[in-house]
Image (cartoon, helix red, strand yellow):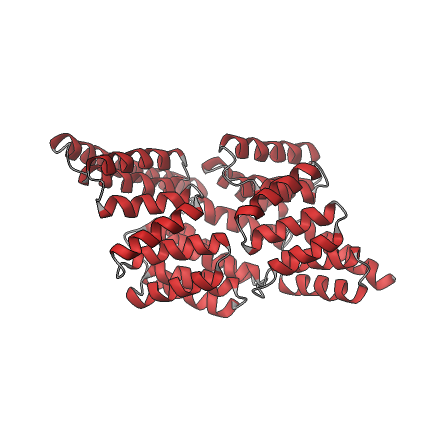
Length: 407
């Protein structure tokens, strides 16, 4: 099939999916009209909006879902299905502490509902309560060993440095995903690709992203994954193409920054700057739901360091997860607060996660402290884990390691 034919097929499939969703929305609205005093129609409508938000990346649909759930709970305050939907939306809107407490209340009502343990797993992971997250995901998979359970098992294993275990669990999730839910199937393959990418297995990662794109054409997460792989192997022109295509579908901050970094690598400084400015605009437009990525960007670029550190400290005050600790460590390092940075990076590495960025940051912090051997060991570990963990920062890691060897 030619590229034009593929594009037309992709457009036709997207249109068919949109039409199907419109029909479902219309059916749910008719159900509400027939029985306006029932929560059922509102729950159906919310579920459709949530699924469509996942498929398209249109975050505003989650707000529509939130309104529908709110109406359902006004009509039937104890409606369990509406409460499950609310718990899911609390996670979507990054209200992790509230989601955790809400999930615990639902757990008391129905301790045999596997879905609730998924909520507890996600909330605890985001808050840095890793033992509680591991306990919750074990209960979830024991109750219902399905795709959502194994996907969470994969993530928890990855956090604890078990790369092979994470890959194995995500393979299982992909195998047992509902073939009718193409977005969910593709999501599994994207995250399987991500697990391969984290440990530098680029060819295997790309195969998973390609599989995701065959199942769900133009899936923005899979396009971004392809961009990461192409950039990692030095194919910057094609990387830019995949990032641009992903961005056209859903302009996520990570994708926008990744495109900016590739432009910078290609010597297109003005284009790169436009992307970085767009990333800042997107974060402001989203109402500052999660500014950690912008803080990391500013720290990487040695700009707005006071603002970056302020964001990192604010996030760390309410979220004790390892990724927030890592960003805090990097912001502290860039401000020359090496000892505080070391404390934060040790916190970030407490699970022995195989994350090249963590090792890179640890190496640079040790270098700043004058600990040459520790710095060299961490920088080597970063590049061994993933030699192209970041288009620009991996090059900085290589230069820093070379400087240490010359000392």
